[in-house]
Image (cartoon, rainbow, N blue to C red):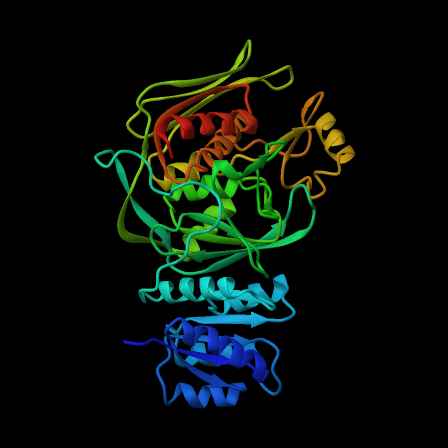
Amino acid sequence: MTQTILVVDDDQKVRDSIGGVLRDEGFYVELACNGTEALAKLGRVDPRLVLIDVWMPEMDGIELLERIRSARADLPVIIVSGHGNVETAVRATQLGAVDFIEKPFSIDGLLNSVRRALASSGDEFAAAPAAGGSPLHAGADDGPTVTERTLARSVVGGGHGLHSGVNTGLILHPLPPGSGIRFGRVAGEGQLDAHVDNVDSTGYATTLHRGGMTVRTVEHLMATLHAYGITNLLVKVEGEVPILDGSAVEFCDLVESAGVEEQGVERAAIHIEEEIRINRGEDEFISIAPFDGFKVTYELSYPKPVGDQTYTFVLDGSQSFREQIAPARTFGFVEEIRALERAGLGKGGKLGNFILIGQGGVVNTELRFPEELARHKILDVMGDSYLLGAPIRGAIHARKTGHAANVALMKAVNGRVGL
């Protein structure tokens, strides 16, 4: 059956243009010039999707979205704006819009958004792959598998970027099986895979970059998606994932508020069959070895007042992560903070979102765990290790290493298993 899409825009040229593109793709298209006409048509036709312009006279797109939600809670709606901003995108998502796109948009950008929206409602119109990265399925056909998962609904969050210091919104959209984890802009086009091939830098945080798009500080969110087994998700953000309180607790809250949806499709996991080890110095290394599950041991060693900390974490469901690892916060030393400031980074660092360590010890907070610093290093390892496009079965052991070593190990794994 031909799917019907309702396009609502007060600009006739825009209506005709979008309608022409969708008809070329085999859709039946209904057009409306304002909210009143759109509501009348909803009473006569049964669209599978509605595209709404934000800026319209008499009844704007947000009001129309609210009225559609009251009448048809399950009908996917895409909001289109010529003056996109984070606040409008967040408001639209909170009201149940499945996507937010900004004019001018390309044909591919429009169709990708339509694909995602229809897939979210169960219509068969496969999502197009994002640019960059490697194949999403990995491992031998007879090897270990995991059930693909996404979120049950879109959710929004927000906060400051640790290094940019800018308020940034965060929107998580469900994706169909086989899509992988992708990052996109809140308002505008462009996506990139959360994949080790797209890692651009590892100084103080993990940054992804491809095709003119950059996303910084992805590791805490990626660790949370790892722990909850989320394999398909679109993360919309402007430049940097918010630092929140320096831990992953609020990301856990965000995932749990949306709900996790099992998608009934199996994905191959990466099974480590022999040890891979990277030595970064005389007393610094990271390795991964065979293990029936996922485990991380981290050995932290700094001069006094920090000293030595060691912690081992076995991922045994999302609750173990939430209790043992997610609360562990980012930490830094007074001299490091000065270096970050000189480099133009760390602008979003507040006394409440990281652990500051001076010559006499921690100066701004009470530790949540005796070995909180080592646990936070495990949080980073979990995030960086989820940049392979598939979950890993293996045991990681790291000593005195950071993001650069984590990514180097994942690239070695990537080359070994042929992802």
